[in-house]
Image 1 (cartoon, rainbow, N blue to C red):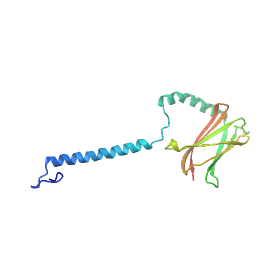
Image 2: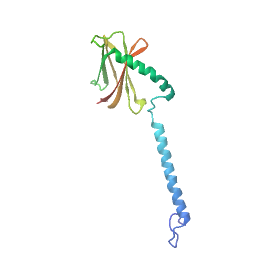
Image 3: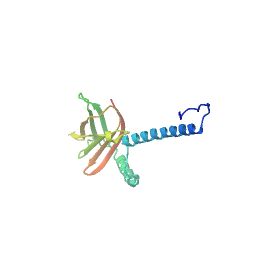
Image 4: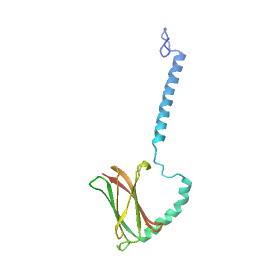
Amino acid sequence: MNLFHRNKTGELTGRAVLLWLVGFFGLVFVVNAIMAKAAISTFGGVETQSSYKAGQMFEGEVAKAERQDARHWQVAGKLNRDRSGEAVLDIAARDGKGAVLTGLKAMARLAHPADERLDRVFELARIGAGEFRGQVAASAGQWELLIDLYRGDERVFRSRNRVTLK
C-alpha cells in the first residue's frame, strides 16, 4: 500500500494529504530546531550581562566623558603588523597644549564586533613619557580598538575606534 500517492482509482485520499502535511511541517520543525541550536551555541556577542545595571552606570559614563572632553587631551594610536604578523599598537598621549602626559597607565583591547570570545588584550609597556607599545596576535578584519588611560585606579581617558587590521 502506497501512502503518499493516489489510490488505484487515481483519487487523492485524505490520508495521503494528512501524511504530506504532517511530513512537511515535521521537516520544518526539525530544520528550525537544528538552526536554533546552532545559533544559540555559536552566539558570543553579548555586550552586557544586565541591561538594568548598564543603565544605572550610564550617567556615570556621561560624566566621565564630559570630564575627558574638558581636558582636551590628544591621544594618538597607531596600529600596524610586525614582521611576525602580530598586531602592534603604539600610543602617544599629550595634553591640550601638546605637553607629554606622565603618571598614566594604559590598557588596550581589540574587540571583535560580533563575538566577544575573539577579543584580544594588548600587553602594553611604557616606552617613554606618555608613550606605550604592545602587541597581540589578531586575525585580519574589522575590530573595535579600545584605549583606556588610568591615573591610579581612575579611568581618565577612553577612546573607541573602528579599525581594519590587514
